[in-house]
Length: 482
Image (cartoon, rainbow, N blue to C red; front, side, top):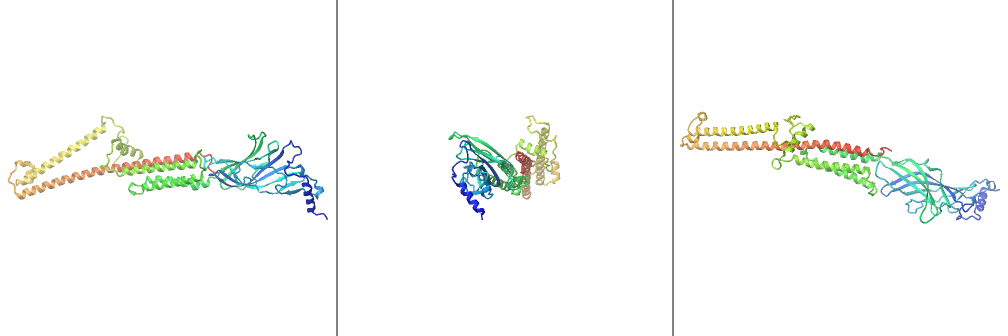
């Protein structure tokens, strides 16, 4: 009784007779061995942007024909194929040129399948570590173009002809990645001449067109950064007396610096390009820094007094009239209109509005001086009347001077006169202090109102700038969702 193992053993013995695994399997020495290579992609494990390495799980599918390994299946119990371990028969020395693996060749030494026609199929699986030039200019809306470069290490094109197999780059068994989309794969064959050798060396490049999925970065980096930057606008709505105005701005600035450090850790240390996300975060940091500076300036305006600062004409015209009118800020007790606005750059000759204003001020000053002199005169007359024993009414009406009164004054009346004079002087001093205090309060209120105007102006400017810069940077990306 003949068993299958007997036919296989006899077939192995007959095939290995006079077989040399160092000999190229060609009938004519001048002809090259045609090797067909196909890559079956299984999974994109990881893309290490910092070290510019792509980890890929793939199967290599080699196919060639060995004329010495043919047999008549009818003579060997209809056996159509047999297996040989790697190294038992001749195999091409095709390697991954751009491998960064420690062992360089990371393929698993699987068996080779030999068919009765002499066709050989060898499918070694491997975890490839390939070097890939990472372009981070549009990160995280970037596309990467990585490739496997396969070629013979020692055989030239006249000895080994490497051709892409049927199907080229097979992705039928590919497991989609959660981070990268694979919109396209291509295969190209090139022939290169090296300085060491005169013969040509063909190679195959299997390209991976990777497109980053942006959902993760949008929800974990971009949206938090936008919301954090918008917090700077709240700082301009806080009153300066709240005490947390500058604290909020500094806290937001530290948050943006943290986001920027996260992006720098993700990006490779290269000076060729700045990632789009880094540009966005840098812009946000500039905005927050500028808002912090303007917040300090607003607080400086708010706490100015007449004892330390004097508001200039241009500053007063700009911050108390023009900007409040343009920003629609209504100050209690002041009704601004377009015709009532003073000129930003007044001429040397006063305008009609200025002349009337100066005339009113002079009249008020002369009136106050006349009133003061009148009061002083009446008080003197009143005092003189008391010293002469006259009634206050007749004294004020007749108006005698102190020199015309009787010099002989009673001691009690003289004391009363001195007390009244002192009371009058104190009243004048108190009145002057009250007037000065009111003027100082008015000047301080002007500075506080100027701070409110600058705060509102910064709110509008930074709102427009944040929206414009965010849209301008993000809309320049080649795509949004992959």
